[in-house]
Image (tube, rainbow, N blue to C red; front, side):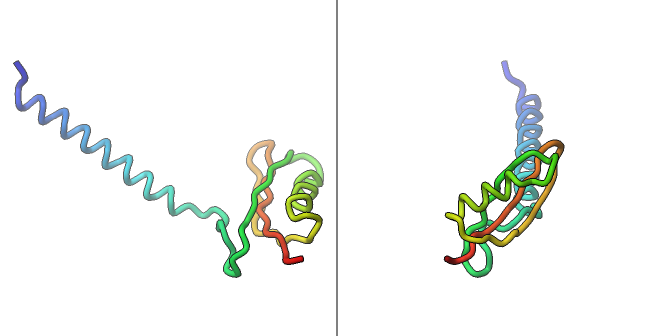
Length: 92
């Protein structure tokens, strides 16, 4: 036999948990990360390399992804041992 109070209590906890998850998902969508596209329509591209040294590996990856063309740096960040370069290729 299931008590209605017990069922209501479980549903209430489930509902609260779902509400918290929805709130966290909505807030994570408001993060301050780099844009996916610049205002001129160019897509941004992230590449990662070692945080140690001069980040030449990231620069080489950016040049390669842009087919040898120049690029504009949109954002850079360092997290632990990883350096991230976000860039947009310039028009050829």
